[in-house]
Length: 101
Image 1 (cartoon, rainbow, N blue to C red):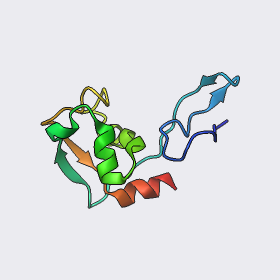
Image 2: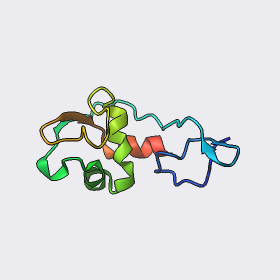
Image 3: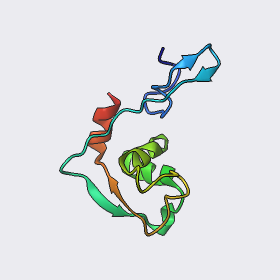
Image 4: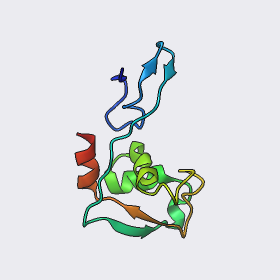
């Protein structure tokens, strides 16, 4: 059973609730590759702050999980591995918005 108590931009929105106490396995919306995807080198201003970059690119700091989902082999820890000088793939805002629908 999916929990509708979470906002559509929450990384927990697809998680199921077990026995009204525990979250089950999370199923994030899939962000598909697009020709507009870009390779981005994380700037020192966003070192360990994917929320700040998500706010800049997508207008919503809660979408920090998008970077981790698109770069699972690079961002194993979505906060600590989000370090300046690391190159990641970023999705365009339109692709993220489509995935959230």
